[in-house]
Length: 343
Image 1 (cartoon, rainbow, N blue to C red):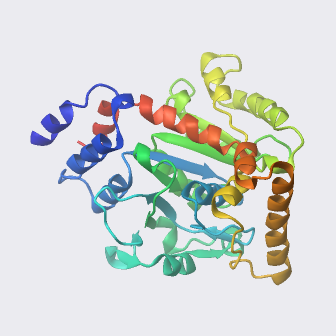
Image 2 (cartoon, rainbow, N blue to C red):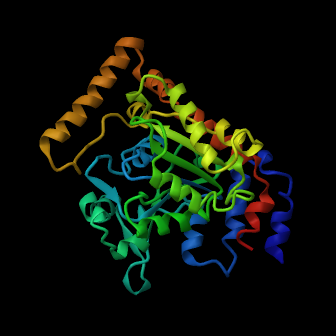
């Protein structure tokens, strides 16, 4: 097969590949006739799938906005994305904003980003009522660069888990496509995982303790909102105890998971990258004003402390360490593991 012969020359570990070589592999794999259009779209956005999972309002959208450097997804307590969103830079240099797959009749829609945001964001009240809409099974593909794009990464923002069974099943299916999983949770409350989060992880990533869904070194935990806690180090220690629910404490696998704990303040990083968010999705004007004023106060304080609020907030956020770890992981993945998923 010509495709396999073209890719054979890269069988030397991904750490040696630059973005041009990764792009060539993507383009060659896109020639596979057996791939569905949806899988081709995801592949066009990146050779590696880095899935960001977690409960609603854990800060997934804030982290995505931080990594893209733009206000790509809504950030508020009253909204949530209701479709899985793939975010990446088209290796084919396509010029569309968004494609939505899974519409009625099997059709796909091309949208400008503002229209996509308006149509596929809704209030959390609908989710808490357990209502399933047709959008739960849809996927949106947003053509946008981000900090990991130069390493061949497609970011996948999932529906929040822990509210109803529909979203849990959908997110579990997406995680099976992942090369790396970043599990985000709100570490500002008690530091530990909730029972819903533990049950979800047991049912997906750690269904079989002897052989998890992914190698332990590709599973990352990111307790978020560390700007609201006194000691991120203590949060990391609390989480390390919780990891004993999935793998025996003190074992090699447990230690690998502990090494992949990255406490973060995604909001700090987003403020450094994209500035104060436009909280237009927040219906209550007082809440909207409070959120924007809080962002402004953080920037003022950081500027007073350092004179350069962007560098200060980036360093304080911990997100740069998480990004570095993701880069190390994708560079260590052998090309054979990726190619085998497609041919």
